[in-house]
Amino acid sequence: MFQELHNYIPAPSLPIIEKWFADYSFNLKITKKRQTKLGDFRVKHRSEKHQITVNGNLNQYAFLITLTHEFAHLLVWENHKKRLQPHGSEWKNQFSALLMELIINQVFPEDIKTVLLKHAKNPAASSVRDVALTVVLNKYNEAKEVTYLVDIPMGTQFSINNKRVFTKGEKRRTRYLCNEVASNKQYLVHGSAEITLVNN
Image (tube, rainbow, N blue to C red; front, top):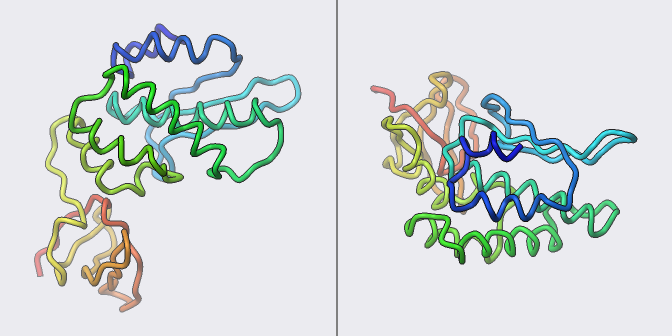
C-alpha cells in the first residue's frame, strides 16, 4: 500500500500516513476520476475489510486531503462502532485533528496551509464546498487554463462540461442562482465550478 502511495502524496506526509495506518486493517483503492465524488469510505461487511477509495487523478495535495478525509471516517467508525451523522461533530473533530498534524509537520506549501488552517476550524462535508480551498488546490494541477464561476461577471453566459448553457446570476452564499438559457429554469451552481465561457 505505502509503495503505491509514493506516487500520489507528498513525500513528507508518508511517515505520518504510515503511522496512522499501522493499527488498522483496510483496503485502499485508487480509482479513475469520478464526477460525483473525490473519495469514499465503506464500512467492512462480514469477512471483508473496510475500504477507502480516492480518485487517482487528483494532485498530490488534493489526494492527501481526500485520503485524510476518508481515514477520519474510518477512525470515527472504529472509535464509536455505531452509526453517526457522516459529517457530524465527531468526524469534524477527527478530520481537523488529522489535518493539523499534517500542517504542523509542514506537509503543505504556504498558500495551501493558510487556506487549510481556516478550513480545519469547521471542515465541510466535501472540500469542493470550500471555494478558497478548491481554487488553491487546483493551482497544483497539471498546467491547464481553468475558469471558475466565481471569477466571471454576473450576466456572463457559460457552460459546464460543454453541455447546457447558463447565465450567471446573483450570489446565494457559496452558490450562484443561474438561468439555463434553453429552458429558462434556474439552478444553484457552486462558485468553484469549472466553466467554459460561451460567446453570446
